[in-house]
Each structure stands twice: as C-alpha cells, then as structure tokens.
Length: 242
Image 1 (cartoon, one colour):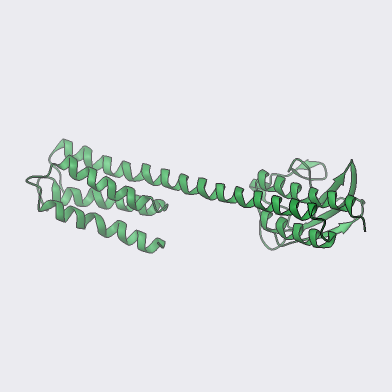
Image 2 (spheres, helix red, strand yellow):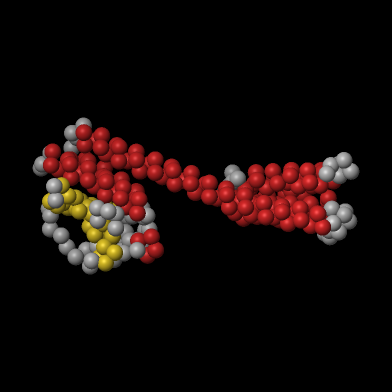
C-alpha cells in the first residue's frame, strides 16, 4: 500500500469508527471505544510511516472528543478522564509509529545482511568450481559495486601502491594515513579508492572503486563484505595464475 493511501486511511477511518461508536455510546464505554481506536492507530502505524501513525492518532483523538465525550458533537471535553484518554490516544500513535519504523528498519537490515551473505557464498562457490579467473573478477567487481552503492569497480593486476585512498582489510578507509569518517562524510568522490587483494602478505592486485557521481556512505559491515569478496579473488589468482 502506497504512502498516500495510508495517509488517507489515517485521516478517514477514525471519524468513521467514532461516528459508528456514537450510535452505541449509551451502551459502549469510552474506555472500550479508546481501545478500538488504538487498534485502528496500530493498524495504520504498522505501515511504517511516522506521519501516518501520528495523523491517525491525532484524528482519533479529535473525533473521539467530538463524537464520544460530553458535550457531544463539540470539540470540547468536560471530563478529566476523557482528557486523559484523548492524550493517551495521541501518545499511543506516536509510540506505535516509532516501533513500526524501527521494525521496518530491522527487517530491511536483515534482508540486506542476507543479500551480502548470498553474494559471498556465490563467489566462494565460483572459486571452488574453478571457473575463469576473469569471470570471477567481473563477478566480484559487480558485487562490490552493489554492496558499496558506488558507480563502478575495475581490477588492476600488480602490487604497486599509490597515494590513493585505501579500503583496508578491517573495513576502514584511509587517506594519507588518516582514517576517513565514511558514515558521516561518505567515500571520496575525487579519487579512486584502492582495495588491495592480498595473499600471504603479498599484494596480488587491487580493485579501484569509483564513487564520483554521488555521496556513498556504506557502513563498516558493507565495507568488510567488500573486502571479503575481494579476498576470494586473491585465492583464485593463486590457484589459477594467468
């Protein structure tokens, strides 16, 4: 369900529910009405948009006041208990929205982790099956591009290092001996970043990473996955020299 539809439901459903409950207010306690509205708020907030959850909460509180509190059909409240209930409805909406957003983020992170693992496993299988080294290099370059969210990756054989920024085995990025704060500032955009491929302490080649068209901020885990992918090429280069 898209965001606009969820926002529309957040705005429309509470007054409809309150209007129906108003027909039963002589036999329906306001506390029970508030619980039903809380269910409505939770249902809207579960979509994962903070604005929708808050809108549903405010709408519920407003129409609860209008339809279900004395004096009826007016935006005023005489009862202290009803004031507390109205405030609680808003607080529930905010709290549930935050929980829903947190849950969505955790779900997205778990899905991303699964994708990283699948990429490393697929690459390991390619190494074990003894396929073309060039095909493996191309595959790893494509995987690193996706994992880091950058423009492109190319491979250069040989062990000569330059003064370019380095993506190190521990996932840090350094330039001139200084550790860059990638999560805050992003990867360098004005130079290629070297990801050396090492085996037994010897550099066998390097991937050159380009992040020039936009600011990419891969987290430490993503950078470590890129290093793990590159390590698979080092193994292949030793097993299948060319």
